[in-house]
Length: 100
Image (cartoon, rainbow, N blue to C red; front, side, top):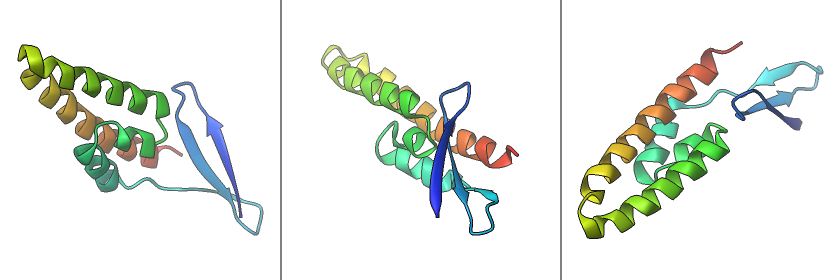
């Protein structure tokens, strides 16, 4: 089977496989897996969903948040960004699965 990656307006990567009959088959994303990936490392769920730029941005922001621990604001910004990453990864995977 051949895998084709196509980009839409939001720079998401949608994986589509061509089966033996020549028909395109959409690969479903697992929202739970996306959320768990972001739970353990912010941005991984977005990368799993194909949102590479958003995932790398979240990773970069969390690195900055770790540095902000030294001025105490990181204790607020890190968990907020982390929670957003988990929620966004889950919701984006659901949205990708509901697209035609």
